[in-house]
Length: 141
Image (cartoon, rainbow, N blue to C red; front, side, top):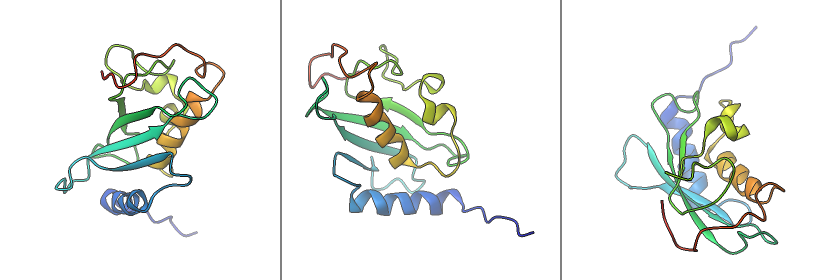
């Protein structure tokens, strides 16, 4: 029986960088390196345009994603830079709490930055979050 090949961290992240630069799906989610000189591919910025027919409709949210040395075997750290009121987001510092966000709680190596961002967008549209009162647009943690 053949052993599955484990792709090294930097190859996974270089692939994600290429995908992020090309754009994702309908264009309401995007990501890239925070600093183009980040040779360790650690700190990323994501953008989510709020889903239609929710209190988030048309709002632009910035998210910082830290891919530690054990990524993709371990989930990244995800923090909203833009203020948002969602059940999985710590309202003091913007951290997406792993135990309250299924993608991070049940992380598997095959997930990606795109998986995280599209799941956050879906969470915005969930019954629990789509009508929550939101902080002033443009405010930050």
